Amino acid sequence: MIVGDDSFHCSEVVAKYTQEMRRMGLEMLELLCEGLGLDPKYCSGGLSESPLLLAHHYPPCPEPSLTLGAPKHRDPNLVTILLQEKDINALQVFKDGEWIVVEPIPYAFVVNIGLMLQVISNGRLIGAEHRVVTNSEFARTTVAYFIRPTSKQIIEPAKSLISSGARPIYRSIVFEEFLKNFMIKGADIEQELLFLTWASEYHCRYLPFRSKLEDHRTVKGEGKRAVKIQASESDKVASARLVSRSHKISTETFWRPLWGRAANPNGDHKEHGGTAKHQKQRIAFVVSPFRGGAVLVCAAVRWCSDGASFLPEEEEDAGINGCATSDYFLFNHLLSSFSFNQHPLETRLQR
Ligand SMILES: O=C(O)CCC(=O)C(=O)O
Ligand SMILES: [Fe+2]
Image 1 (cartoon, rainbow, N blue to C red):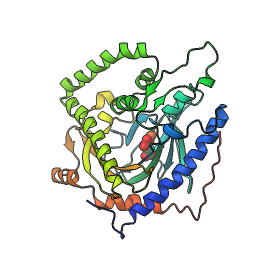
Image 2: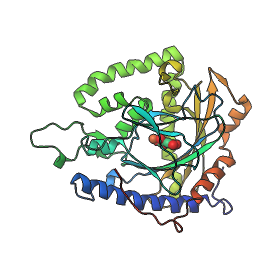
Image 3: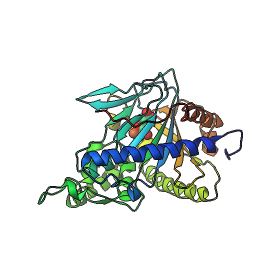
Image 4: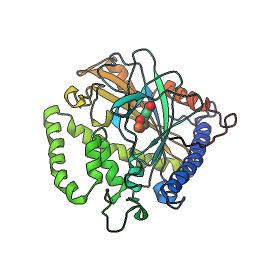
């Protein structure tokens, strides 16, 4: 499916939006670095050169008590700038032992600190733990702009933040290595933080982790597929990047389990399922046609329960071949509704 025709305006909207996001994001990072006592440009360059724009589409969910739109996680990047749809309360942040709704404020973004900034700041900044709940009445679309390092970038605590003789809290890690781990265990924050700490611990824990995957595979019979899908996912990102060089916008759609597991709001997602049978996410890549542009991923979650799809099978199959045009219109509409000319961006940091 090609969506780059004039009537669609997607490329224009995405280009403008991502340029503004990049500008604002870098300004914000400079302020954060300055606040940490680092060179304001510390996070410029490789640490922030591989941004990603991710559009989520959450259709109404027939059973909100059974599943989450996105399980509890911290973002795998430096900073996220999130545009929420107005009037729908779905994003929640975990603070002081409870889940607090992050209400959408018109013409304002939600900014999350991600895990990579947690590492760089050696724990002075902590990634926001958040999740998305569902509702049975309204569909919701959001657009997240992730400021991310390039895949080969080494992430480590800034040297000047480590007092002499002290050991940094986190080890150095290559971003793509971290990301690979995150895509499999993203909802498991404790595991994720362990992975970021010392190599020796990582090596001892790596084997049990492998066997956990094996268990998952044997018990659920789906793990193998989940792993395969991870692999093909990075292939798609790579091919999407290739397409971007020819300045075309194209989409490809496939299904993947939501971060390899289902999740429900009561927190027992491991018991609830953990296989592609329960929850699937439809992903389509759209490539924005400008330098330094983000690969745009449009995700639509479909709800299933105990292996029985809520949607007719044939509709599900149709989804594999092409993302519904209506999903893109929703996304386009949301981005267009944010007019940068009318609402010049200001960066205001609040505690
Ligand atoms: O859709 C949302 O409100 C949040 C999405 C999110 O947490 C993410 O993309 O990391
Ligand atoms: Fe997130």
